[in-house]
Each structure stands twice: as structure tokens, then as C-alpha cells.
Length: 165
Image (tube, rainbow, N blue to C red; front, side, top):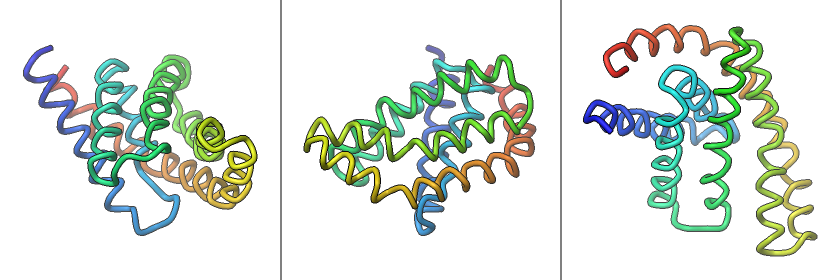
């Protein structure tokens, strides 16, 4: 790994953490999904998976360790891989907005599965059902966020990526 890669991964990780913190006052509205999708397409899957691991570890350092944080080590690399695969076929922001929307809608369900392993299936179902209104907001806000910001951020990041790639 080159020094440029290490610097880039650090910058991208910090940007995602800062973006999450900046919007943390608005429930279930986040820029993390959009950034992971963009980073996957522009900077590549391998770099972005490393970014997701650093981001997940940073979350543990900020919020402490809990069972839900374990899912971060799977959910963000998973999104990165799916975005990379879709990115080879889809060139429109609508496809990525759809991905982000589905991701937001299924977010709570994925966490409910994890919680079921620790606390039982009844808890997992309750967790998921009680979080459905938040998942709907999450999915809708992800869809709108990607639809509005994908192209402008892709243009800016693509120009900057030439320095690192």
C-alpha cells in the first residue's frame, strides 16, 4: 500500500465520520450511505472496505462497544461490494438512489437479525417492528439524499480522485 492510499483512506474515513456527526441531530437522516456508494465507485472496493473498517472502529471509539456495532463490520463492507457491482451496470443516480433507499429500509431488519442472536428471536422481532417508522424515514431520506447529491459529489470527487489513483 502506498502512502497516497493510506492518506486517502484516512481522509475518506474522517469525512464519513464527520458527515455522520454533522447530521446526527436529525433522526435517521445520514450521508454515510451516499458516501460509501460514491467511494466504492470512485476509489474502488478495496480502499472503501478499508474505509468501512476504520469507520466502524471509530464508531466504537466514539460510542463504546455494543452488539449493534458488530453489524457495522458487515453492513458497510456489504454496501460497498453491492455498490461496486451495481456501479459496473448502472450509471444513473436513480439506480444508486434505489439501492440507498432499499438499504435504509432494510437497515433495521439486518440489525434485528443480529440482535436475535444475542437476545432471542422475540427481541429481534420487537426491535425490527418498533423501528419500522425509522427505517421508512431512513430509506426515504437515503433515496432523496442520493438523488440530489450523487451527481454533484461524483463530479467533485472524480476530479479529486485523479490525485490519488
